Length: 473
Image (tube, rainbow, N blue to C red; front, side):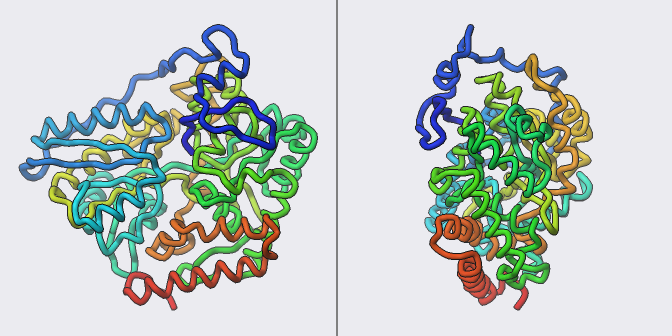
């Protein structure tokens, strides 16, 4: 997901890890300054920051733990933003960033130790930690009164209807469009990219056979593979659970989706996808080795600064339409939790309100990666998507326009139900990509693999029901 490391141009059969983006640009034969574009100068000024005095006197320390953002300049802005707020209100704020894959284990270790950070941010549901975190109900009441209605997408990712508890706070999120190389898809008569799963299969197979460029949909134990599996299953009419939190994975619709994934793998992908990490699809797209990935806009943003010729060729499509639906999971959900060991929960809540009041800056400083969970706070968003403030010379300033409809085709993990603790564990243990991978590898047929995954889901749901944290039967 995060293109921090690039690669040399490679054969489609082998990826070489660990090469910097700068080296990649040089290897691609760019002239002048190694193919790097001039630093992006936004066409408009950043929104002015907003500050309100906290409701109570604050003091002490506030320790934040965050994933390293997929648009790195965001972290530079955020660290200053957080510490400056602390100076204004009398709180010593410190911010630690670690790789996104390390956050869940870090949360578990801090909860086990009973000490650590006061406020932690992750990109997917953290519902499995509900018994060990502070309730955000009061914060949600205050946020709604100040900022208007929160998106249902965000509420379903943070609210447990069984316990009537907001275990997390999600003021922002990111869509998960398809990223495709226009020049490759033009050669298979789809210049605007695929719009359906059938077109993805037909066009992707032709690109692989005729242009020697494979597809980039992971089948491994990482977050993007999770998102691919969910989008595909939903589009075929399947789901892990229904709206009443009963497990429904075993169905003809899910079996058909898994059979499609096998066909797509055989026609357009190679064995590398079974060992991918969250950066692999971004790296492959930037290096010119992939025709299509399901991801955010971060690879394109990195390519704008490092390999502008590639960036100009990357475009975006909405969720692909399947036999039953046109749907994708949110790519990132900004779930903030405060473990029960937090020693400064008052300051944590006040900081969250300050962050939410400045969602326009959050969106801008992330270069349109972060979308608001309280849309009234960013009235500029559609204008920025119509004409990208960070466009580089020669690129298309309108290519983010497909994201204007993101709410029409984006949903929460656990759809059509909530992102309950069982869904959180299923996501964290990669039940769905494992289900697809077993069939793609030829180890099980689709029905066998779905039946196994369904049983795994039932066991997880039963465990959480027995703890009183999941509804249904």
